[in-house]
Amino acid sequence: MFRLPAFWVKSGRGRLAMAVVLALALPGLACGGGAVAPTAAPAAAAPAPAASDATPLPSPTPTPPPDPAAILAETGANLRQAQSFSFDVNHEAGSIYVSSVQAKAVTAVGGWNSAQGAQMTIDAYLVSGPDADTDDGTYVELRMAVTPDSYFLTDPLSGYWTKRPLANISIPIAELNSIIADAVDAIANPTLAGEEEIDGQRAYKITGDAPATVMAWLLLFPEEGQRVDVELWTDAEAKILRQVRISGAIGQYDDADTVRQVLITDYNAPVDIETPGPDDYLDLSNLQ
Image 1 (cartoon, rainbow, N blue to C red):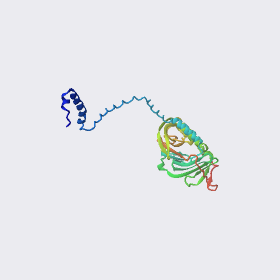
Image 2 (spheres, rainbow, N blue to C red; image 1 turned 120 degrees about the horizontal axis):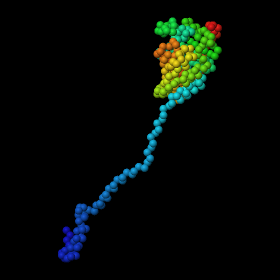
Image 3 (tube, helix red, strand yellow; image 1 turned 45 degrees about the vertical axis):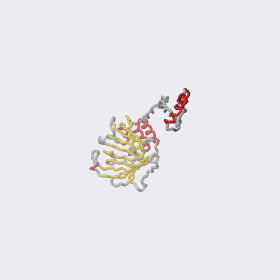
Image 4 (cartoon, helix red, strand yellow; image 1 turned 180 degrees about the horizontal axis):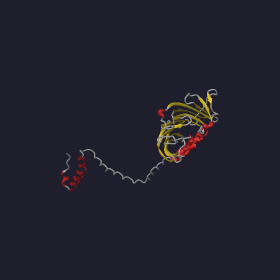
């Protein structure tokens, strides 16, 4: 162990030197005789979050639902431009009484061409009168073909083609698309009832009501002021009529719960109207 000379200890200079030696030695002894450990810097305080000066984004403006009246107007306009289509008429309840052949028609499937005319196949029942039920009738298949200058109808019993007076046809075939468009335009109180798929295409469903007189051209003799409930489906993109469902009596022979459904397909697709050959029909066109 290191010792200071005695004369240093006793003298004032010795005591001063002793104090200096102790001051230098003690820190090293406290650390086990090694190097002096650096003092750790105090941890920096986390910065306070800065106040945001960003402007909040406005809430997105909700897209208004489509206007059903505007959809109907566009659908009617597109119908007037159609050159051809196929159709399928089905009665969920009731039928159409055809007085000329004393039958009740329940379905009609066919096609229409603005230049050539129309043709259809009709499922019907021969009945004793307009008040008879179809369950009591005899099933027959009627075929019809109408051109600008001829009207052909099969005989309900034999199935043989007959040529009838053109004046007997109640449907103005050349204007069939415009007649349907008039019925679309006549729908009142339209309400958008959602979207559905019709014939594989997305369609808007619109409900409303219409005067029964829009079907007066079928010679069903609707009463003035009589109205029917209408459900209509129109293509969501092209705005062309896909399907219409009419609930209620239209003609004087209709049951009150009659429901008719019409499906329209193949807009502007080729539709050829086939009529019987000159030797394949009985000419009754001169009969009144």
